[in-house]
Length: 360
Image 1 (cartoon, helix red, strand yellow):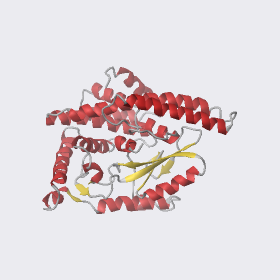
Image 2: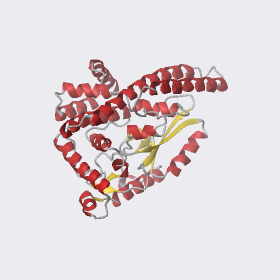
Image 3: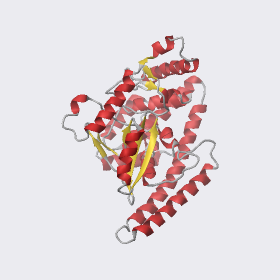
Image 4: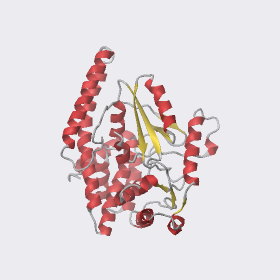
C-alpha cells in the first residue's frame, strides 16, 4: 500500500501563518506544520543558482531545466496561476515531503475529520516527522480505529506561499514531475473546504489534459499513454472498492445486533476477497496498480482514502470538452460549479460523468 500516496500524490492543504495561532487548541500541530514548511522553504535556492553550481549533478540540472520549461508551459498554455511557485529547489534526504494519517472507526467508512483554521476540515492530517504521525495513530488505535499512514510526494499551500520544487518531484520520471507540477498548481485555481473528492478530481483532470498537450508539444505521447493506463487501473480498482464498500456498509449497519467478534470475522473475509480480486486484475497490468503489487492488510482507512481521490475525473474532463478545451473558460465553469451547494454540485458532476462517453 506504500505506493498509493505516491500514485495519487496526496495534497496537504495547509496555511501556516503565525498570526492565526492565538488561542488555538491544536497549537502543537500547527507549530510542527509551520516549522516543517518553513524549513522546506528556508532551505530552497533559486533554480538558476542550482543550475550555475558546478557540483550540481547533470541529471538534476536536466530536471531543473525541464521544470523551468514546465512552469512556462503551465502559465502560457494551461493558464495556471504560476507566480513564483516552483522557482526554487530544496534537496531532501528522503523521498517524501511528509506523511499523512487517516483514521476510520472499526465499523464505519466515515473517516475522522481534523478541522483547521481557514481551510476547514480534512479527513487526513499531515506530519513532517513520522514519529508524530505514529503517536497520533496510536491514540486512535487504542480506540479500535483502522489506521493508514502513507508518504506524501508533494502538497500545495494554495498560493499562500511560493511552493518550492524538492526531491519528491525530481526523483520522478520527466512526465511524472511535470504532471505533479500541473496538479499542484491547479489547486490554486479553486478549493472547496471539506470536499476532497472535488478538489483532487479537478486537479487530476488538469494534470491529464496538461500532460496530453505537453506531450504533443514534445512530440512524445508515451507519458500520456501511461497516465491513461494508470487511470484505467484506478477505475477498475474503484469498481472493486465500491462493491466492497456496499458489502461493508451492509455489515456495519448490523452493529447494534451482531456480536463484534462475528462482525470482525465477516469484515476480514470481505477485505480478503477485495485483495484477491485486486490481484487477479493486476495480472493483466503492465505497471503497478494503485494498491501496489501486494495490497497486504487492507482496512477501512485505505478505502476511505482511495474513494476520495477517484470520483469525478471523467466529469471534469467532460466539462473541459464542453468548455471548448479552453482552460480559462473551463476554470470559470469549475469555479461556478464550486459555488453550488453539495447536493447540486454532485448532481451536476453526475450528469457530466454520464455524458463522458469515451472510455478515458
